[in-house]
Length: 208
Image (tube, rainbow, N blue to C red; front, side, top):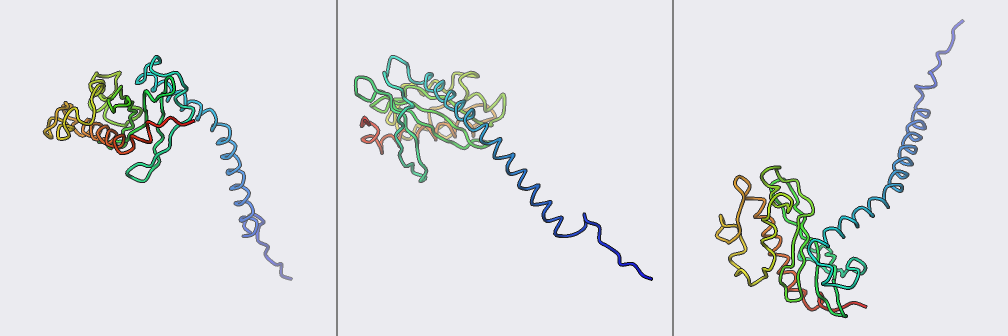
C-alpha cells in the first residue's frame, strides 16, 4: 500500500502569495499611518524655519503684513515654480523674498534672498547645504560674515562681469580649498537678481 506525499502548507504557492500580499498590505498601511502622523508636524517645522529665515533678511519694521500668507507663484527659467513672498506696508510692496538654488561641491545649496522694490539686496542666508565642514560651510552666517557682504548690492552693482569670485575675475572672495562653493552661491544670487528684473512688474503688484 502506497501513501501520497503531501506538500506542506507553507510550501504551497497560493499560500505564499497570500502571505506576501498580506505583509505588503500591512507594511503599506504602517507607512501611510506614519506619513499621516508626521506630515503636519514636518510642515509646521518647515514654516517655522522659513519664518525665522525671513526675520533675518526682512526687518519687522519694513512690513505690516504676514509675509508667508499669500505667496506669489511665478515660473522660473528652468520651468519650475518659484514661490515669492511679498512684504508690504501701507499697501505697497516693501520687500520680496524667495529661495534660490545653486550647485556646490556636494550638491544643492539653498539660499533665501530678500530684495527691496528697487532690486537691492536686503539680505541673504543659506538655508541648507552639504558642503565640507570647515571649508565650504563658511557660506553660513554663523560660521563667517561672507554671506552678509551681498547686502546692498544689486544687478548693476557690481557690474555684470563682476558677479563672480575673484578667481574667475569677479569681486567676491572665494574660500581656500573650496572655490566651488562660493562660486555656486554667487551664481545663484546673480540669477535671482536677473529673475527679479524679468518679473519686476508682477512682483511689485500687490495681490488682494
